[in-house]
Image (tube, rainbow, N blue to C red; front, top):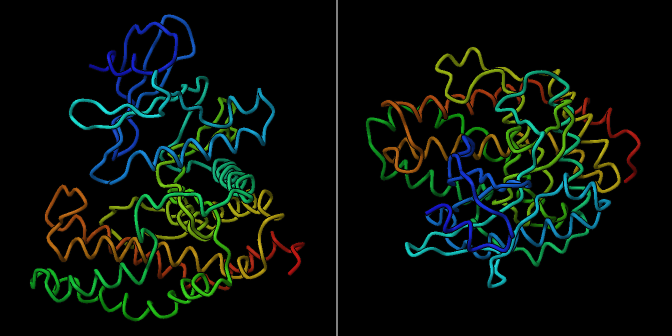
Amino acid sequence: MIQSIFNQFEHNSQYTSHQVLEAGHINDTYLIKTKTKPFYVLQRINHHVFPNVPELIENKVNTTNFLRKKYSKEDGSRKVLTFISTKNQKYFHQDNNGYYWNLMIYLDQTQSFENILNSKIAYEGGKLFGDFLDKTSTFDHTKLHIVIPKFHNLKHRLNQFEDAITNGKPTRIKQAKPWIKIIYSEKNDILKLQTLKESGAIPLRLTHNDTKISNVLFDLQGNGLCVIDLDTIMPGIIHYDFGDAIRTMCNTAKEDEKDISKVYLNLDYFKAFVKGFSEKTKGNITQTEIETLVLGAKYITMIQGVRILTDYLNGDIYYKTEYENHNLVRAKNQLRFLQQLNTLTDELNEIVNQFYRTVKK
């Protein structure tokens, strides 16, 4: 089947074998080996998570085509994903079961990391995600499709949370009471960011929306090379990408660590990420955005905590779990990290200001 689907695309290569790529939790991804290089990455997009896959793929293709013009031909082939069209000039193939597939050129001589191992990786991640935002800053975000409606809308997530408190499992609601209380105590301050966005005080732009370190490819010397996993590209604010990076890269514990006393913010990684991020975004960021970047980290962490706790109260409908209170453990982890962000707010803001000192209003 894989060979047959691969041959629906315009590649002029001879298939020899394929293997599953152990990356990602939503889509099915395969490395296609051919008689001569380049090799390819064939991906089946999960249309249950993404209701309109053709629009999602259009976002990816238009973004990468736009990005490639920002680089030399040689750099563009390594620093930007290249999508291959089908023989009927589409960028997706729909199989007989209704699944959608897209094909990319495989970037060899690269590596990726599931977790931050040192400050250099954090710095390189900051540079690459910052460069992605900088180079797409003139992209017309109104031409992007909304692939997941209200994805980073905290008001919407809180409404779902309220419904879960009303209609969820009573025993779980009782067990989660201390963490429910934290959400209620924090929500008004954190919602200020959404108010700024809705008022136009913070500009909309193209954002990646899933800025964990595993979505960066590095060269073999450990330098950031290419941003990958572009499925969630949508209009957003810079805080979404900054905030999700801090949430995922700077937590000293795994997301399902049961001992939340191990949850701390790694200041060295934070400084390294901000240094790299600021170097690339100084030319396309406003003073209001700078002053609220740390609030962005709180905002995204709160959203994740709310989403996971909502799912726990509803009986684990969305997130896969391995044991009874797995989602409660995950939610505690996020909300504990939010508390860490609150404790360190002044210090984090000073670090951000230090690296953006030269930016004018």
